[in-house]
Length: 153
Image 1 (tube, helix red, strand yellow):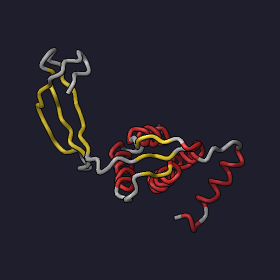
Image 2 (spheres, helix red, strand yellow):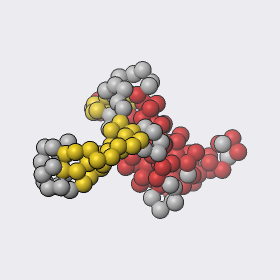
Image 3 (cartoon, rainbow, N blue to C red):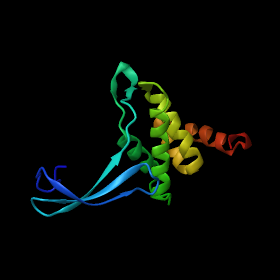
Image 4 (cartoon, rainbow, N blue to C red):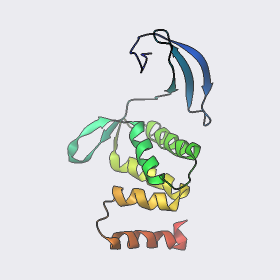
């Protein structure tokens, strides 16, 4: 593993343990060149998934994009990081176990929305406002009214 500080090619693993949600391995490493310590994470990847974007664009599935979007939606909401990690891991697991090698971005977005709906209502609305491209206050009102509906839960 290349050192992020000095770019030396070799590092030694000092400690390995599963993450709290058991979806990856956390490895503490030490660079053999400069002695700096850093952490890496190893995750299982079941298959290569291609995401079908708008305009017929295609790109490789990237977990970090979901992590960033969920983190932004949950910002300043007091949602514990481990709950965010479980949501992201759950979406990734759904994508990888779907049996498809290609998946529309819209389907992934709906998976994220479903997870956020159960995690935090405000984060759910924040994500939806970007994902569904709200342009007016009325859009927020209409969407929020569906959450107040008893059939929502």
